[in-house]
Length: 289
Image 1 (cartoon, one colour):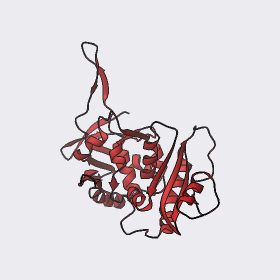
Image 2 (tube, one colour):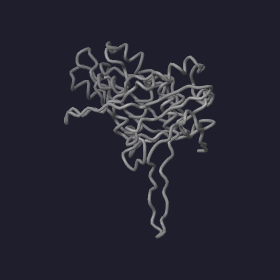
Image 3 (cartoon, helix red, strand yellow):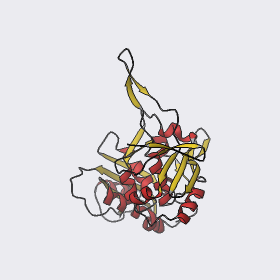
Image 4 (cartoon, one colour):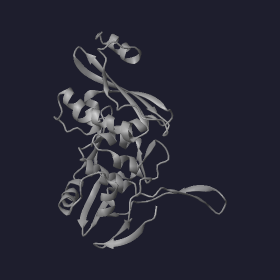
């Protein structure tokens, strides 16, 4: 990654002329599993673009020949040209009015870390300052976020910036990160979520998409189709019902070879239909067959 330094408003910023698809976004798994205040698709992409510019810690050798990690103390403020954002994002034109609104909204978006067992809840910001000025977008990442994005040696997940930028639904990236985190040590995994817990993970606003069918059509299936079309993950989703109500979702996730031909877009399956394997088993357990 080639970056320069520029000074604006008496602050030194790390500046890049263009964003590349192969830039990496690395997040601690606790951050991936946290609950995000609802983010628009463009807000997500700006945040992830900024996080992709964080330089990795460097492995160095001391005078005795011992290797050590030269850790980074802080994240410099970041400056990205409007055109660089526009070029890599698959979104409508980012004009000044829209970027001004984004500069305002980004500083109010938070992340909730909640551990009911220890009764510990913590809320932090992604961005503490954002400005749009004469073709440049300036952001300062919250220092409270550092422990989740800096000098990570274990319990982290890395994805390509280009993958995130291709997504067309605001619900896709949170689900994709969850899937990628689960595949750290295996090419296949099965995950199970309560419907309401999954809504929180995807950033569905509280009180929104209350009816499962609306959630399925407007959030879940769009995210699954996005993942199926733009990544190397094959996902099957099974609905688990109690009576006629869907209460849980089971995801069978497989990481496939990039050269493998993609199958049809993923869709949720109704376990009330005759089936074998996991859906048939669950249908039996819940008495829906």
